[in-house]
Image (cartoon, rainbow, N blue to C red; front, side, top):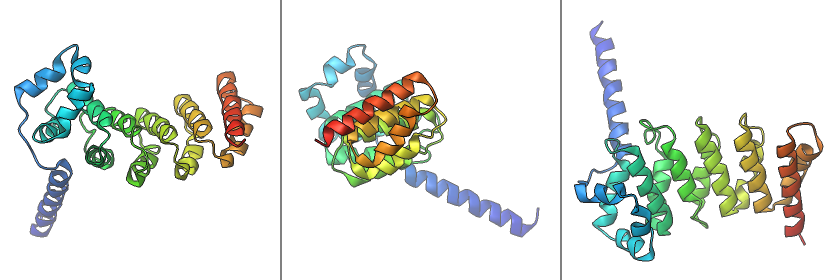
Length: 225
């Protein structure tokens, strides 16, 4: 290896390390007691309450929660519970960090499906264009579960800016994603989806998908009255 090649290799490694460090964000200590709270079988009954959610909205609890969710060394099941909690918070702060996770290419490195829970959590946040953009990008993710959750959340949010991306999801190779897309289009209620849904309902194909498309058409028709 020449000296020039070696320097290029070192430079590339430094760039990758810098990008990874930036994407990972600042590190905060995660206490054993925090993890133990989420390990309990009744964690949701204890934490996903008005009082429990309010407790985690404030620092230092929120910063510790965020560190736990972003820590790849912590069991993915625990991290998913933290993501669900962030989805229930309903704050701009939580939404911003969930969007960051959604946009972080390294976030789901250890557990490819974990980002699907981020997409699902974002379905609780309406009126934020960054959320819609992140979910639109999620409809093109290589992981099926991420695509499915992204489409579902776009339907829950109901923002018509997402309609072209959800229409595109009707072509997904997965029937599960296609069914989510049909349902989302019916829920959003935008007439521009009608010809695409009618093509599915009246064309050849799976009976369940055709019936779902027919139902979505009825939803759109009802929304226009």
